[in-house]
Amino acid sequence: MDTANERSERRAAWAIHVRKLGNQDRASMSGSVEARLRAVDQLSADGWRLAAKPMPGYRRHEAPIRILSMRDASAAPS
Image (tube, rainbow, N blue to C red; front, side, top):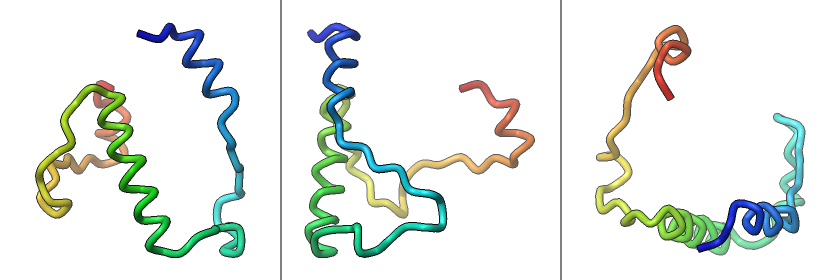
């Protein structure tokens, strides 16, 4: 198992691009739509694997959600 320090050191090497909200440049998005969807699929699978949890088997429209007002959200435990 990795230590928190080892994970932090690996994250320091991640390529991060900061963009102002509402000012995204479409030209900066490389790859086809299909390639980006495959990347999202792979990132999702990696995230669930890293969390040591099974990938949910439900469809997106069946996903369990909670709708909170801003007031309720600020009071909700995290």
